[in-house]
Image 1 (tube, rainbow, N blue to C red):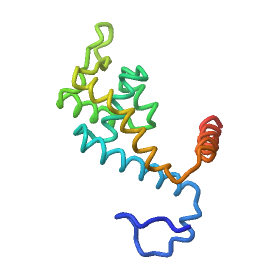
Image 2: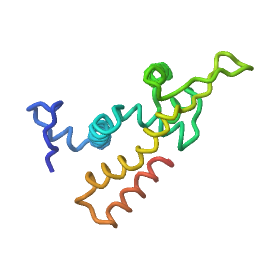
Image 3: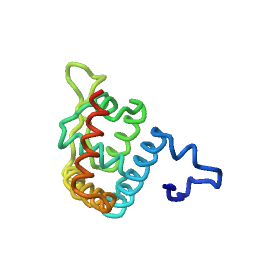
Image 4: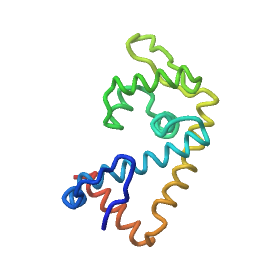
Length: 152
């Protein structure tokens, strides 16, 4: 099966790269992130990364930059820059820790709560469209395989 051409694609012989498992996982992640960003930018005026961070603070309870960086496997400096943008946008606040001034607790503003609250619906919509050609059993098997990869 040939991968669809994307703006990042070139006309090189893609046979070898298309059989590389890691590349396929990377491209699938890229397609999902790009599609989610299209929806979040259009509907919420935030990127997928910004929406994910707000979602992690509200729904998962991650309230420190270091925890978010670890969960997302992202450089802490990148998370700090993302947090800075969200604070400037009025979606997130830093609450200083009285015992350790190097650490701040992250709290969503009212507007940030509204954005985070819309993320599950956007994700459901995107996943439904991306997985539209798969049967319920195929989706269940795919989830099971992903969970096995994550637990190994």
